[in-house]
Image (cartoon, rainbow, N blue to C red; front, side):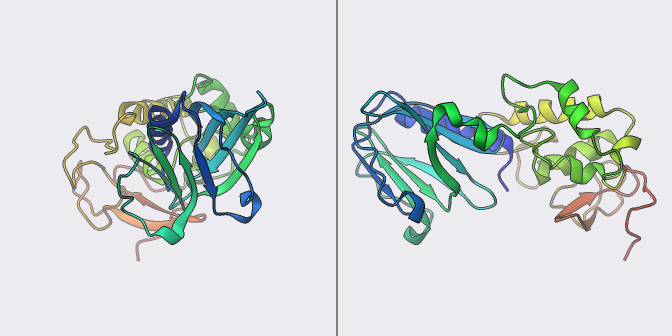
Length: 269
């Protein structure tokens, strides 16, 4: 699943390609928007809110609208020059095409695609917690929201976008390793939630503006993470084999030595 920094980067790609331009043609390939025509509309900006993309436009009658999309596990936006061949994904995954004089934006396998008045954006994203990469970032509020269910495991709580918006499975695993916290630890037993969410924000901010995500400081292939995606490989700190196990609806990676086992953690198998 794309993390908050990937969505932030995608929003900037769309902003550079379309902001200030008039749409010359639109093609929606989803039933709820199949008859929608944005021709003549002006793109004001492209922004992100956690893992949500918000393309803000002004209609020909002057009304402000927002095209909302969510990437989930497999969605993507690509920007091409006019006449450039579209590549990388099969055509049957295309959900929307927006053409302007200087660029063509293509949305692949997008989810929750909706066109709403900009004044009503909160109906779609108002439930989200503080955005780790947004102007509303507030670690105290994130900690307050995380603490609302002190019995929930911290591994599951960090993925709840209602608590803080932007953390995905990669950053969840890496932050918990760096803080030495077992993913199964109840939120109420985590010793320093403020330090944990502040580290998450710093990691996302450090990777903003590039597509390679690293928590180790290295951008070399195979060296960008401490535990994520490294099942059975030696921990970079202690040499113990990294473990992988389902937690809630997602898998988690952790080092059983550097992240002391919580009683609820699964036994080695």
